[in-house]
Length: 451
Length: 64
Ligand code: SF4
Ligand code: SF4
Ligand code: SF4
Image (cartoon, rainbow over all chains, first blue to last red; front, side, top):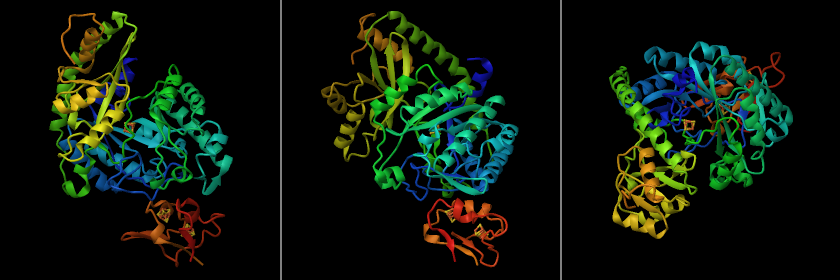
């Protein structure tokens, strides 16, 4: 990667897997109007107990959004990116997007601005996006063939009228490709989100990957369809299922070698706040933020200085660990699940983990392959057995769990399921621990730890 | 003649508000409402009523 690109992504948690250990994003839901209908979306749905992309409990005006961003920036030192990611389309509901970005940028000039869009209204705003320093754009592209698109989009609203069927999908496709090309030409980094819909566009996404790569997309994020009749989406109601983890992984593997894949996406809510994998949104609802917060960048500044210092150290340890594993030349591979709350270290208690990050140690080194969401085990003493059973199911195929602390009881239950767990490497760098573990497992170094 | 919004189905996305060529739609408290005195049914400007064709909820912007 060239250094100019690294500068653009090094504190963007979504565009860089490495950065997501250090930096946080927040989304503000200011632009609820949309110009297309997708079969996986239900605009009416809003539930505070439900976490899924696009869902939001609090729609904000640009002024309220500014208040919230300032409050979060004062309290969450990791904050580096402000995104507008639905519900609705940031480019279509343009006046609100623009007003929000202009206000925030004048208050907090160093925050990165980022939008998500379906692309239909994107081309007409690319110049203004560039002018406002919006550095990262995500376009949701689920098809390049209108015959496929027709099954995903019942209608679009374009040029003051509604289009349906293939006509709608064709216009959407053309606008998406044009918008992507225009962004690439201006050096704005793009991420393409694709929703994998089994039997509709799953294999077609291989074609999508080629098209977007040719047009300069920086990352391709293939996400599973979330479909539940209770969400009331068209797909939910027709019984269209989402892919399982293995199907998703198989598609990811087939896309290897094309446009670079994003594997650390958490399919966040449209009002998420914090490091990826954590959502502190509930701490910053409007009734929790001061009426006229004054921006105080001290915490963010101090945190950035710390990151700048420790990051090189981490990178060095990481590269060394990866090289060690690769040079051991061992055929077998090790699937490791890590409990972390950021900083690139194993620093979360087993019982508090809401997700485990999965790494694979193999002949090629140590690779981040994804994450597994779980219900935390320590939830105040009730339902622990059920939670543990759920975690064990979610950890299917994992050899070893690394965490900062784990009790004897869950450790034994995991062991019975064939999953080892250890806190021996608590607070170590993730890759360094995996390298040590790999050496112990495959007998290339004196045994240092027992799992 | 004018259009109206069935408030119980409205998601308050606001799309109709900025698409209306007559400035007839406004958020009043918790509800989007169409001012029947201002609504022209988009006649002479667009072939089809803008509020009805942008609205994500079926049968929510309807003839009054
Ligand atoms: S949904 Fe994915 S890309 Fe968007 S903020 Fe969350 S992790 Fe990043
Ligand atoms: S019919 Fe046309 S003029 Fe009347 S409210 Fe709807 S958009 Fe406005
Ligand atoms: S477009 Fe429909 S859903 Fe959106 S605010 Fe207008 S009436 Fe409500």
